[in-house]
Picture 1 (cartoon, helix red, strand yellow):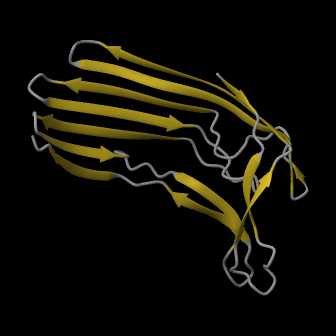
Picture 2 (picture 1 turned 30 degrees about the horizontal axis):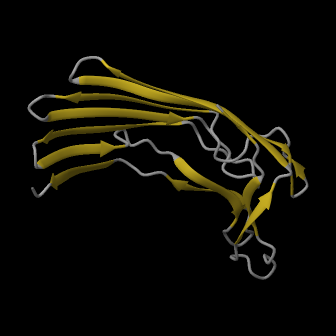
Picture 3 (picture 1 turned 135 degrees about the horizontal axis):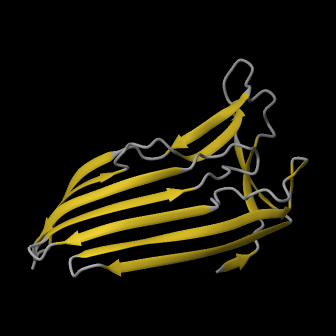
Length: 189
């Protein structure tokens, strides 16, 4: 179980905006008090000599207890990039002749992107799959990450960036789209 305090936070700040609307400064600030409490659990279960299932789950409560940010009292609000829950599940099959398959599903709850604004991510679930053949010296894998091409945001910002009025709006950094590939590994013996 995790139980601790946190005080560091980051925010976007542009003190030179007058006359230089496209300037940008990243500012790190300290909250007076924060509290982080959480628990994680993991399970691996071998159903047969060939087939395994497993997963993990985490619960987190990360809040500010005392933090004034640009005149806003954020006491009681969740800290950025601290989803309340996350989980991961997998199924893994390995045939004695070297064939294998693995399915992974991982998800996370919504979270605040920053302490400087109220923009939040959306909850999302990603699915990865891998099929392959392994011998003593060679492994060939066909894989897909983000199999269902889920659109999700990893980072988010809220500020004015577009002329002529530079009205504040949401900008996000997208997570990786679906990727499909083949991996070939050879071990020299």
